Image 1: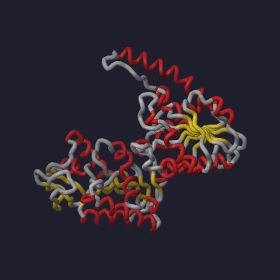
Image 2: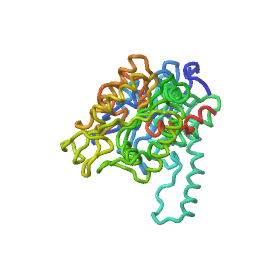
Image 3: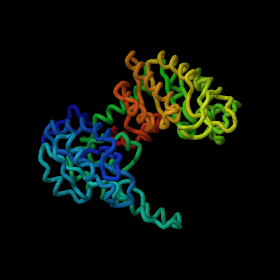
Length: 416
């Protein structure tokens, strides 16, 4: 494994796995270029070092070639941000001549990797009633052809850089398998290095007290994180729809609030483990409830464990936010994953906005703050706090699996 800061890119072609899976509107205009901008420092480093670039990414979830998923639509923005006219290879498996002709300072983008089933290693086009034997045979065929797919990609370059943290949890051709072709010339890009450093700081080397804020809709999606973090943090603040499963597990009334009855025993086990470990669990005492899932619904504030029938919990109440504030302001390392309410509706965005503000204040006071997860990142971006916290992760599923303590294939492939 090499380091991007010390590697000599002079005269070399670097194939870089980026995550340019950006949202496009109906006219193919990029509506959020955050992921592209995040990769620019790595790409400019290669160019400044006298190298050339071959960029590879996926876009969406195509089942084969489709114009609406073509990476050609994002070429103008990538070219603008790089300050270089980016060339385009309309077939990632037929780019030999274009790659060979690249000169130092030039950039080539390959077409969407997922136009090929070999990228993910999953068969396509199987009949719905296909037998298990047929599915197994089809998968074996794709896996065999995947070797040639990866070898072709690797043949274009002299070194490999993985800078796509958002796909690091996938053992795909471009994120894990290709690294084997560059045993001495593989490395992380700046984005990957930053993501890994930030999360490992929280998990393995935090300054205490350490607090995790976990929100979102379902306990079931955060079980792994909860179980891993209980052994590592001092406090856990629970928000969002997750609260009501815990409330019901403790015998409270949750009305029509979101509640996973099949996770009641899990919630009880987490409560018991936290108590045994001396970890503080904070849910707040009061919540804002509504009589309908609507921004215009009637609302009132009630105790979190006394929600009337016909009403549903939608956000943490101001008194609960104040409780959270005391915990946050006494913490030195803070992780936030998941909103505290239905923040997409302005009437129920108060607690999430307050949390973003608190993290900005804690950061200014010297705490290390990490925000990750699609909704949390959307919240800090929407509310103008993205540049006021220590680190904002670009990975959704990848960050969740990392926080669960899992080894991510995209990281393992570089470190091996």
